Amino acid sequence: MSDPPVIDGARVRLRPLVAGDAVALHAIYSDVEAMTWWSHAPHERLEETEAKLAKNLVAPDWRAWAITLVDDDTAIGSIAAHEKRQGKVAEIGYSLVRSHWGQGFARESVSLLISFLFEVEGYRRIFADTDPDNAESNGLLTRLGFTLEGRMRSEWETHIGVRDSFIWGLLADEWRA
Image 1 (cartoon, rainbow, N blue to C red):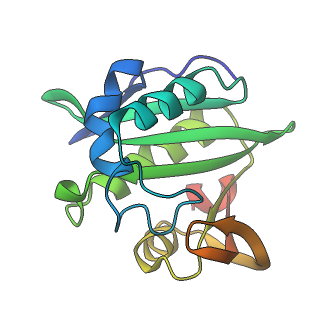
Image 2 (cartoon, one colour):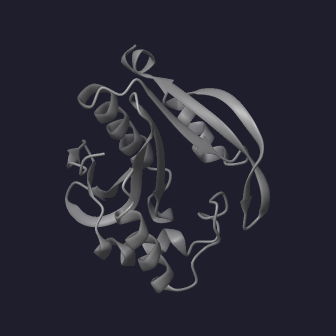
């Protein structure tokens, strides 16, 4: 995958994620509630977040953006796309600092990434993998037009136990409609 470009929205900007974003993103990675549905436990130390971010930045098949407000370059979240299979199929993931929950920033950010992947890069399918009990993320994907395609039982071994996964899919034609 190529380097991520800057993508501007009405209230948020997606810009390439950088190592210096670790300090701001530690607010997510250290938040027990925000990390409930992730595959790993909350980080206790900033160094854990720095190491995770450094590893993610060199992953050859993931592109990651910092979510910022258009008038402030401080990361309030992150969003990523992973070319899961050749043939223009991508998995997406996202997170947002708790102080920005419930204000529409996640919806705008995910919408920007979806539009970019479908309209600019020509992807044919985007999917997301969520915990069935992650009501907020499942609700967001539903509102954005994703279809719940399946449940993978006992898919993840996480810090809260073995968990199922919901697989959500969206096709380019569905997004355009």
